[in-house]
Structures are given as C-alpha cells and as structure tokens.
Image 1 (cartoon, rainbow, N blue to C red):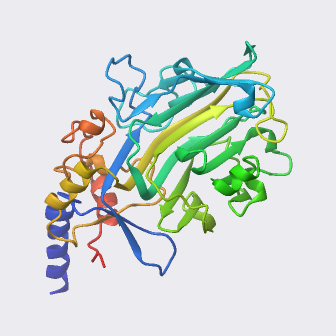
Image 2 (cartoon, rainbow, N blue to C red; image 1 turned 135 degrees about the vertical axis):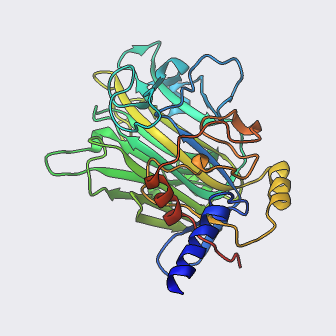
Length: 368
C-alpha cells in the first residue's frame, strides 16, 4: 500500500506539478514561518542568453543595457558617471548543458558589467542593466554574481522605483581584504529619511554592513532580496543576512537593476579603478506579484486550483522553471521574447537529475 501511495504521488507530481505552476511560486523566509506565494516570474540565464545581440527590439529579453550620464554633483562624487551599453558584454557558453567555465570571450561565462579605468571628460564609464517594466512589486529577487576584485568600484544588485524607494545590495571592492577575510556587503534602504540625511543611509535604520563568510570575488554566489509587505530580507547563498522593517520599506512597484560604477567618492566607491574592472552575473530569478492589470487578469484566469503552487528552490543555479514543459502562459522566460512572451520557446532535454530536482522543488501548498 505504501508503495502504491508513493507511485500515485509520483504520478500526480509528474502529471500535474511538472505541467503547471499556474497559481504561483512560493517561498518561506525563515523556518516555521508562513509561505509567501507570488504570481509571476522572470528567469534569465545570462550564461546562455546574449542580451547584446543587436536586436532592434528594445527589451526583447525583458532587460536592456542603460545609457545615461550623471554629473559629479548628481553622482555625489568628484567624478561623474557615464553608463554605456558598450560596457555590458554577453560572454556566453554555446552548449546549453554547461553552466560553468569560460565564455566565448574568455573569462567566466555570464554577463560582464565593466567599469573603465580611464576618466573621460570628468566621468568614469560604467555599466547598468534594468528590467524594461516597473511591474515588480512584492517578490523574491535572486542573482548569481561574481564580484570584481579590482579596488575602486561599486557592484550593485537592487530593486528601484526612485531615490527614496530603493532596496540595495552593494559591494565596495575597496572594502575587501583577503588577508583578514573581510568581505562586507552593504544592505541599504534608500528612503525619505536617507534623503533628508543627504542620501547617507548609514545614518538611518535602513543600513547594515554585514561581513560575508566567503570571498565574493573568488566564485559566483547567490544574493537575494525578499521584498515583502512591511519588511525586506537580505540573503547570501540562502543564509539570512538581515531583516529591515519600518517606514523605509518601499510601498510601490519598481524594476530590477544590476550596475557597476565608480565616481571617486572616498566614502563609498572610491576609485576610479587602476585597471578595467569586471563584475559578472550568471542569472537573475525573480518571482513576484505584478502590478500590471493584464498580468493580474491572466493570473486570475489561469489559477483555478489554489493548491497548484511550486516551491522556489534555494541555491540551485541551474534550475529554471522555464525548463518545465507546459508551463503557465504569459510569463517571461530567459530564452523568450521579453514581457510580451505568451509561451515557452526553449528548453533543455529532460534528464533523471532534472526530474529529481524538480520533484524536490515543487510542492502543493494551500494559500491562506
């Protein structure tokens, strides 16, 4: 009987859970806490996706390299900042089954964000990419990042609406010290309070400097922001670093960004770097509630059984719900066609390991 029940459960999981996550994606922030369920996803595999392929369609893949300048006054440093798409470089692996190793341009595969050492016209040239919509409300946002070891830059993974509604994880390479294993990450809520303090969040409750238990320049690690009602939680490799609450928690939807910059500010990025500096991103996985009415309508139309929810796995760089067959429509896949994609356009072949991983990652949950 036990064997029959196991086989029945397996067939249900393969036939239903692997077919659909139409009622969303769930996380648990801490052991013993309730599940949070999110309606939409964006998954981007930068190891295999070239977002710099010259397509004339803006935001074809849900992301776009940014191009803009900031004066030294606006940047709050002795140098201005110049963000150029030329500093955003897709360095891919052709074989879709391989997730580690050198890319076609040499060095670690992924999306390279480069800060130039040369100062031109009083500006340091850096890199920034952003999602092309401002629909990302409460959710869990994760990125695989290998941070530069060249002193004098700031590498950032952040959620952004404006300068007083912002959630940051920032790495200042000049703060790293391999000799004594000091590798801090700066966790920041930019808020009205930080604006009143001259945008110095360290003078508010929305700032914490946490020393990482590993060298972020030696390998890729997953950094995660859980933006929830009234609270923000920060993680590294699925380990909770800090939680922030209060008025500094954003109250609107926004977008996701990754940037790498320097402006010579002695109290922050320092620099400019003595040589070109590269921070590399391997993936971004976002599971969120969309603020777009069309997305909300699609969710209501497809979610008929509130128990049809898939749990988001932790620390699994090669797992993408995108790979699952017959996924819920109108999501943004990492090989698809941006926010207008109505289906899944690319998958890797199934394997026993993938099936086992998927089974462990999917669960039936009752949304209360």
